Length: 141
Image 1 (tube, rainbow, N blue to C red):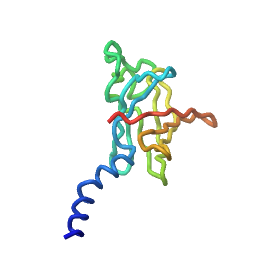
Image 2: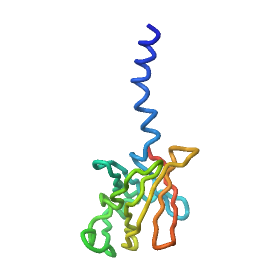
Image 3: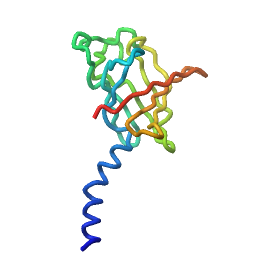
Image 4: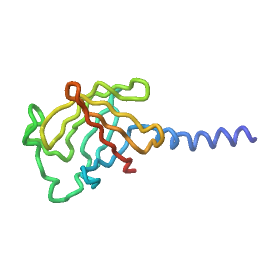
C-alpha cells in the first residue's frame, strides 16, 4: 500500500518538478534599468528550442514592427515574432541557435541555459564574432 501511494505521488508531482527545470515556458525580458519590456515564450519544435515575443508590456508599443530587420522578418510585427531559432540541447545548455534584436534588426548566434542555483533564471547569450553579451531573464509563470 505504501509503495502504491508513493508511486501515485511521484506520478502526480514529477511533471511539476521537471517543468521548473526546463527552459520551456514564459520569461520576462528586461531593459538596462531592470523594467520588464516583454514576455518571451520559449518552446520546442522537434528537438530544437525556439522563442517568440508573447507580449510587449507597454500597450502603445504592441503594434511596433521590425523596420530594421532583414529578410523574412522585415517589417513584421514584433509582438508574436519568432526571434530565437534552432537551439539544440548540448549538456545543460541549448546552443548553435540565433536570436534577433528587434530594436537593431541584428541577428546574433546564441545559447541559453538555466542558472545553476535558480532554475527560474535563464541566461541568454548573444555572440558577434568573439564578443558576447549575456542577459538574465526571469521565469514569468
